[in-house]
Structure formats: C-alpha cells, structure tokens
Amino acid sequence: MAETTFWTGSDKYLCDPQLAQAFHMARTLGMPLLIEGEPGTGKTELPIHYANSMNLELFTYPVGSKSNVEQFVARFDHVKYLRDSQVEILNAQRAEKGLESKLSTGGRNPEELADYVAKGPAAQSYASPNSVLLIDEIDKAPREFPNDLLYALSHRKFIMPESGEEIKVSEQDMPAIVITSNREQELPTAFKGRCIYHYIHFPDKDVMSQIIEKHHPEADEGVVKVALDIFYHLRRLGLERAPTTREILNWLKYVKDQKPEEAVKKIKGLEGIGALIKTQADMERVHRMLGTDPDQFSMN
Image 1 (cartoon, rainbow, N blue to C red):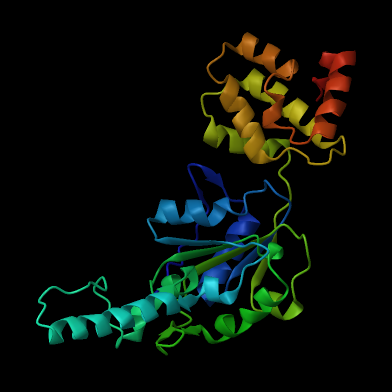
Image 2 (tube, one colour; image 1 turned 30 degrees about the vertical axis):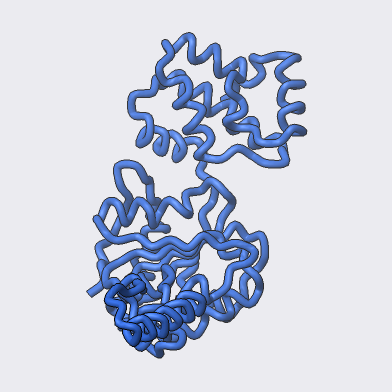
C-alpha cells in the first residue's frame, strides 16, 4: 500500500496547504502530481524532502532536450549482449582445446535476456513499492516524450525491451510521482489529463520569511528584513532573470557568521550580489542603481 499520509512539509520544506492537498490527492488516487511555476518556488524540492522525511527511496529523472522513454524506462544493452555471446563462443573453443581458464561475462548469461536490461528510474520506481519518482523539468523534453508516457501512466505498467518482462503496479501501490515544469513549453492536454495539477506562485515576503526561518533559524531578524527588502526590490525591476528562493538562502548563508551590523552593511552594499544576479546585463543595471543611492534598497 502506498504511503498516503497527509504530508505538510518538513523541518526544511514549507508546504502550503493547497500544495499539500494536491500532493495527498495524487498519492491517494495513484496519479502523478504535475507542478508548474517559475524557477525557485520549490517544485523540485518537494519530492526530495518528502522522500527524506518519510525515509522513502527516491528515483530522479532530470529531463533534457534529448530525453526519450528508453532512457526513462529501460534499455537493452545490445553491445554487452553481443560481447558476452562472443565470450561464450570463445570459452567453448578454449574448452575444446583443453584450456581450463575462462573469460568472464561478469556473471551475465546470454540466454537470460533480463541480464542485459538496464532499468531506468521509471522501471525502478514501479518495481519498488512505496517509492518516490521525480520527473524534473518535463517542459524541456521533446514534444513526443510526454505523449509517450501516456500509456504507462494510464496502464501503470512497463514492458522491458527484448526480455518482455512486465513491471506493473496497482493504483494503490503506485509510487508517489512528482512532475515539474517551468512552462517553457505547453504540455499536451491529454498528458495533463492523467495528472493532478498544481501551480506554485512565488512566495510573498511573509512566506519567504518562514522559508528562511526553516533554513537559517539563527539569522538575525534585522538582517533578514534588509535582505528581503532588497531581494523583492530586485524582483520588481524586470530583470532578465529574477532572483529565486535558493539564491536569497545562499546570500544569507554567506553573511550568517557576521555580526548583524556588519551583515546589514554587506547586504546594503550588495556584497556577494553574484548569489542573486546571474546575467551581465542585470549586474550592470543593479550596480548603476547602487551607484546613485545604496539606501534606496531599504524599502518596506
């Protein structure tokens, strides 16, 4: 039976009630949870922290522009199979010549095709009851990739290549599947129809303060306030790449060992701004603003 505890987050992950409800529904119904939202909203972190806090096995598939179902599910190693078949022939020839030593196939048997099937994260998670599967940034995949997943999501099974082995799970034993998307491209309607959907909005100051508290409970309140003022001011500038949650956490980590007054001085001077700003154009724009009046960043 799949783990269906109503999970509300961990000591390092703040899970808002709507997201917790969607995640619980997905696991209860044996359906994937599709989470969309801009980078830095905690989409990828949810299954990682869930698996860690519940002590569950986690399988991850980072999607790229060349992703395909074979990589995701399983592939047959034809090269290794051919090599081992040749080794078997050579060993038979050596035996005919009275040679006792044998060449090794690493314990594989060419007559057992399953020995040559390399299972990907999908097959591994389906074969591991009560596990967690993360399909990260599916919007980066070729158009056919999500369409090719429809069968597996609908029928809850995979057929291993060449060996014909079937890996199948029931609705109750489906792994907790989380699929993330930054919406770089729209996903097929049929694919979305197989998922529970949730959109994560970027956290406001109050929520971000709670997130910071989880990661940096020792942080000075005044330092956090100044950092948040600057952080959200930068996000309002229309930069090429707005700073994200991970980046303000790194920025605060950089000054955490400083005395509060020294940390505030560094933050107002944008020391370590490379933790937040990631393009040359954005960096130049911010530094131009800093050159006029650093105190302009101290805003409510």
